Length: 244
Image (cartoon, rainbow, N blue to C red; front, side):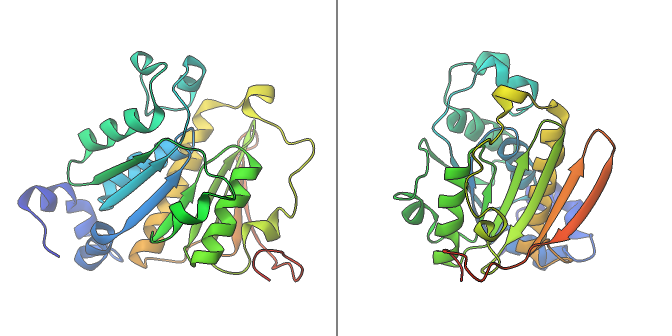
């Protein structure tokens, strides 16, 4: 796989970077990544993956842009209100890097549709904000053998994990919490979305290029109020209905 003169200049800082270089950049160009949820996590992640030169990006989201999104979803502008998130994001990513192929799917994945949509991709990045979709995406990734990068936001906290086979997301969250908080109900500090989206993209880049040690089987947790971060190992649940 060769690079044009424009790509060589564009990816110059990767090409001279230890653990990426030409071979790693070729892996990025050949990679196919599906991003589920084009909100606070998926938006920044998509921008960095497109800038990094991931060859094919697919964006999945059935929502439209609202003014309340703009406090944290920096891939959108005021003029984008009421427009499709995936279509606006696709234009933004293509403008950022015309060498990236962007596909759009204006749909919400469910237990019935996730498997068909996820099969055949090299990696899935989940930035959705509801547990039902997360569990459907996780189950589909386990069945298809596709690595999953999962990023999530709370009011002042965020977390990122990488799942590949066992343990899976369902080992971490066995059931949907009955009192699950939402951004609309409890709020979220906007800049936190950029942090979690960027780290999710970074983990995807590491996994695709083979650089470093991805967070596979681990959960990275950040408390923005205190500035403290910790990483914990995720234990495989012997009774997990998905990966056991």
